[in-house]
Image 1 (cartoon, rainbow, N blue to C red):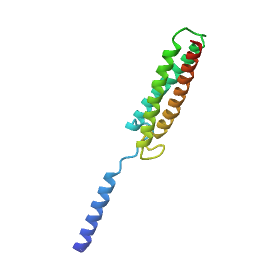
Image 2 (spheres, rainbow, N blue to C red; image 1 turned 180 degrees about the vertical axis):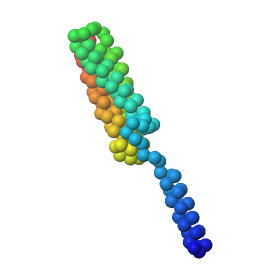
Image 3 (cartoon, rainbow, N blue to C red; image 1 turned 90 degrees about the vertical axis):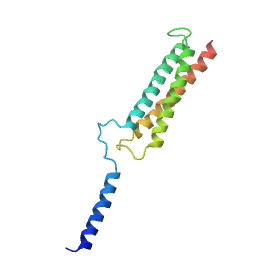
Length: 132
């Protein structure tokens, strides 16, 4: 075995070892990564907006209660964009596709749920102005 061969093998092992160390370990399906956590928070914000917006829409028609539809609509109009922006940031920061642990699927779900919350909040606010 020549010295050149040993040096070439050592150099290749060092370069391959550095490249292997630079790549992150793939996340399993049950690992809660930072991207998945932020997308979960964004989805929950949007979901709160959807529930409150739906209740505000029902209350603005005067079926359930009186006077709470406008306040709920404003809360839904605040929680919806917060969830949508959080989901958008997760999607923008994701380096991989679904299943990589970056939370891209949850980010897209947060975008959709946040938009639904904004729509419900806007409808409830328009209805509360019309009936009040």
